[in-house]
Image (spheres, rainbow, N blue to C red):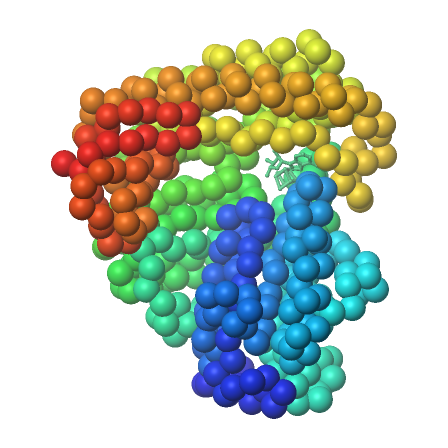
Length: 437
Ligand code: 5AD
Ligand code: SF4
């Protein structure tokens, strides 16, 4: 691939066209969007702050719940106005929904020019370029960018936090989950490549690394990647999301406890507190296993944050099953929780089953779950009141603790990536406030 500034998009407005990327969904999507932006920049593009200002508009979409798809679809629908005003604008839908709904998008949203799934997303700038030159997209060999080591591209940008995917896809086939169908089975990045990328990020001034994967801890070299990333000079914080509960073991907790640069933060989605439901979800751990590991974390690293995801109203979930989910929240006292109503997803196993929990019941369970999660989070956050904590600034007057808690402070603002000490005054369920020390 020629990485020079070789954009020659005849019908686009300038020699340096502008790209605008909007991201829906998970951190993996954010990481993909960032990387896609770097690739556009390496091809001579500039970024647009507003959609109206862009020559190329990209929506990176999510399919994990129907609600996420509907939101993206309505946003994409509203881009028709933009296309009517400026037919030269290129509208692109990429990511999971582009994969799942390729045909529907092409037929029902004709103002969309490109529909590209996750596996080919990084080829988008090339596809656009070929299209502008009138070359059929399939005539030349396409370029695989995901596994390519991209130091020159990464060098273009200075940020304080770097997302580093260590795997893509997932082969777990939880019965409710569409990910294996839209992102494919899991593929692991070689450890050397991951470490090389982290080292380049560190050199460009990035001091926080977020290692990403749908089941990040199933990477065969996960523990050594953690240790070695944490040892890179200049890297102050390393996080990893998302951990599959069945593969979080005591040794992993010990490594986090004993390695200062590894953040005391575990995102372990339990999904349900009922073993019957977990079994039908095809999650291969029990609530006993989960409780054991959560209690081990609490004992070994009392300050560590444990966060989780929950699904309310999975097919066949009884009141008793749901009470068990509330029990687990009450026992673990999660620092942060992401709660969802079950949403049937085409292609998945559970899609074949009756979605038998009525919407009203789902809503009521979700409300009760949210209340319990909020109480727990508030209680955990309250433990920090009166303490001085170290924050990595996100720019301005906010940043995050090592436990990934958001803190807003009074006093002088700080540049992104700067370390700031804050005296915590007040705890809320989703954030903390204080004064810069
Ligand atoms: N319905 C509701 N929530 C879902 N999630 C994944 N699939 C579904 C679904 N079909 C939730 C899970 C997962 C998080 C990313 O999204 O809790 O951990
Ligand atoms: Fe989906 Fe389960 Fe894989 Fe997570 S582990 S991405 S929930 S299939």
